[in-house]
Image (cartoon, rainbow, N blue to C red; front, top):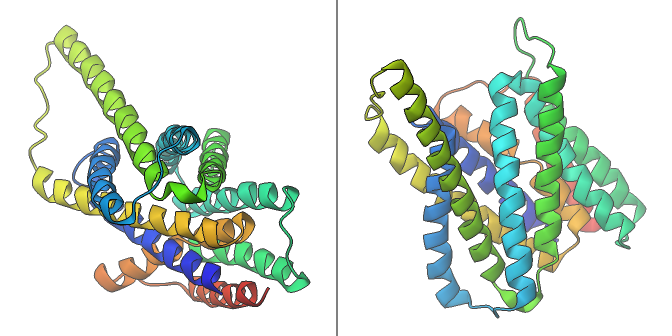
Length: 293
């Protein structure tokens, strides 16, 4: 029961972080949002580490740092595939793959579920698709490149969950501190390299530097908030993995589009399609079955 509750709560919090990140990305670049969020999340983790504590070990540091590398790559691929669209297909595809990879790993590793548990996992995967899929007018078929990036992104997100699951139980928040540190370092290095290349191209073409001040402060605030909320979701995932099975947590966390959709409906007054309501209801039913299993 505890794992189901933590998993669903983590999915809602992840969805909230994506909502904030999406708003911030309308004002500043997605790469900057990710980098700023990594720093703000790291600050929050360092403060929490003073309270929660955790043992620093080679295993905690190693798995945490490696999860930071996979996380940075996963986010970069996610933004890239959603940029070329269509989001209504690529987003749920990423979520489903991110659930299937660790679920398969966990089951092959010896995790066992009652028969109703397998029904629940299948229902949850269907729920992910229903929640994330919204047919768009004139929607185009995804290009092979977009499909490949979505699958790779989902795979890396799944690997991130597997790596976090490998961390020692007595490490507390130490692995997440390493995750955020490595993630932020990679993102800021990427931004610096891209900025340098762009400056050289402008210099060769004698073009003026773009004015990036418009919307910077609101975007900065949203990116900072996104980092704190995303970190809170990571903490929930860490606790959920230590309390339950990887296969169950991975499927529950993949329902994160529900949080984004609900916030968009409340804050932006976006309409929730009937198929999405059906997905939300199926997700709650699946969570109940997992709790029983």
